[in-house]
Amino acid sequence: PASLTDSFLLRFLRARDFDLDLAWRLLKNYYKWRAECPEISADLHPRSILGLLKAGYLGVLRERDPTGSKVLIYRIAHWDPKVFTAYDVFRVSLITSELIVQEVETQRNGIKAVFDLEGWHFSHAFQITPSVAKKIAAVLTDSFPLKVRGIHLINEPIIFHAVFSMVKPFLTEKIKGRIHMHGTNYKESLLQHFPDILPLEYGGEDFSMEDICQEWTNFIMKSENYLSSISQTVLT
Image: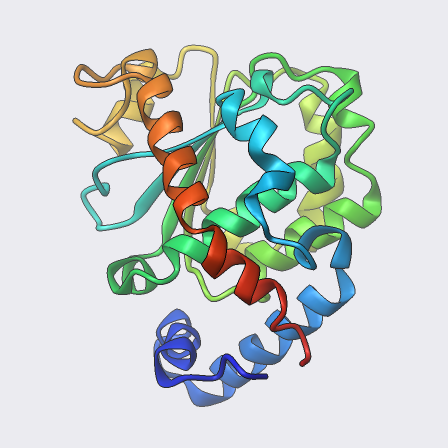
């Protein structure tokens, strides 16, 4: 592929702590996954997910956590499953990952994601088929050059656990150990993981989710030429 520059390859080396065999396997898996999931990865132009972004589905925190990880917040209540499919939602994550993985500090220190599951309904659950679950698990484990340092679930309803049990068998023990379920009384425990960097809605003091959602939407739209270019790099 045309994109195999030194800086591109370094992502895979850093993601696997410079173990050449593991980095090579990750690189192969990355291209294999993208080739096998065209409904998600073939077109990374932001126009396809602009509605989700404008709805406030995803915000990227301005500051890193104490370990240097980039922190993302996803709000399920802002995903209307009648309008956007699970593949659209997945594409938001892939586009975001492709942008933040350009940062050397993120390559080194990985990411942490907070999923606010308030508003999760059966209409969301029906979108997560076994096939989608397997694709989600592949990215979390060994198909993308980002270290997933933590997954924090808040406001998780009972019906969410059925979907989680479908994804869980595909996850490595390492990833399973990095999943934290905070429940509905989450603010104190979440602040212990992310002191001083959260938005107002989650116990912070300086900015709102609306602020960071708009900032990230603007950044994605400014990156549309880059995203269009990497849409064409799959097995070319």
